[in-house]
Image (cartoon, rainbow, N blue to C red; front, top):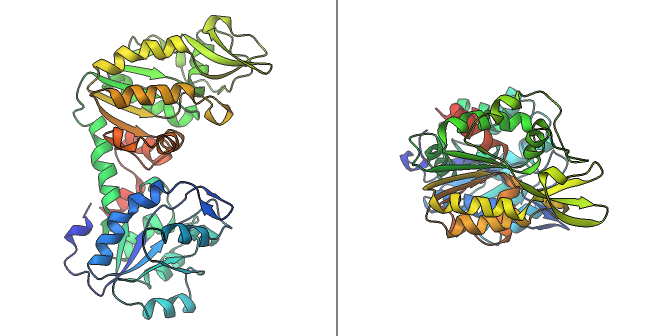
Length: 371
């Protein structure tokens, strides 16, 4: 990928900057500015160099306005919100832009052609600018028009955050340091299976938590009650034989209206697993302490239902360790942001699904498109 630093002439050029400002918004206010803050170095670099910057992003699945995001962004950098995406009105506004000016176009997903990867839509977007920059790592696993078609239509470059993501996440599979400890949580077994198989080879130990652990416990013959499981056959029993694999030995269950710490052998049919237990946390502490590299993706409990305790405790243990730490996964990163702990880790990824796919495959469609 070519970095924006390699652009010879930026002054006076119009730059179409694809970011991912798909941020949580409540009552018209941005609740977490993590992704916005991560795009600021690229934005400020382009602005300082005298570019006319057109920001494009999506929010949700479509139908929502980016007006609230524009207000959130204005806390950091002066930006004008344009309630359109393509067409004569947008072209007129763009043609009147001055050097260093920044505008934010309306939600890309409000036009169905974005998700359809429509060539005409991409051509209309390309007409607005001279240069395309992708700084939207969290959505670079998608085959949307703004991700994979625009790089074919304009001179294309990677923004600073996208370059950082590639550089830092690559450390997990390009000659990783040892002892290497991989912690994997969350749900969606189908997306995590390639990671489990890959990192059981690369890492020294692999701990499985979150809803993923329920499938392993069930495969071992334990009762998991009403807990979330994926009933697809992933040949888990073969993985269970791997000596690198570590599973919870106890869990927090919801029994009626009570939260109880139980051994995995004590779970009842009417109970629901919310988190890993106290002994499981204790078992991980020495492994974390002696590791030189820790890669973590996904929460270890059902954190929206009150199962965030173990994830918070282990985040603190990882932060206190001397290991190089790489943290990813939307929910895990939300907790890091909430706890104001980002600076305690070597790298915190902005991606969710994109982080998983990159760690599994070593590239993404949006990255390939820039090549």
